[in-house]
Image 1 (cartoon, rainbow, N blue to C red):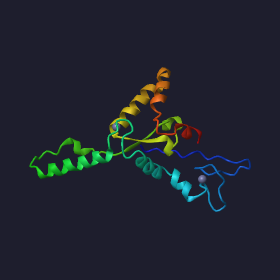
Image 2: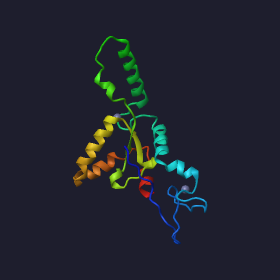
Image 3: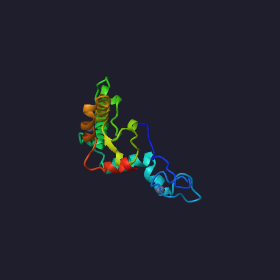
Image 4: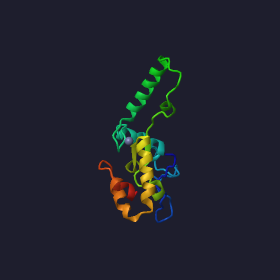
Length: 162
Ligand SMILES: [Zn+2]
Ligand SMILES: [Zn+2]
């Protein structure tokens, strides 16, 4: 995932921009965020760190522990180095890593906020993106997709209302 979308800027009745995070008033000495705290909460990199911790570094679809995957990858690499096998296994090309999925997809205005993000392994992320592309042009599948996109541990509604 590379794209991130902050909550949009909103304005009060006098046309003053409101905080991008909490949509509260912004003190005179600041520009788009009311406080460092709000920036920290909504800045995409912090969002990812928070989501990864909240999800206990597990893929939210297949439940694989991504830290475990990475540890296994290193273990296998060390074992291969100790062996006299000259051919490096193909699997060492792709070191496992966590990916972050927009539950309401980015292209459907989904925001990069913790409530709309979840941790996925690379395989599940690929599958999910593929399924989403398939469902996008098929209205019959849209509702089913919305259901599967709603993990029970997330406050889906919050993300939509932000
Ligand atoms: Zn704020
Ligand atoms: Zn997975």
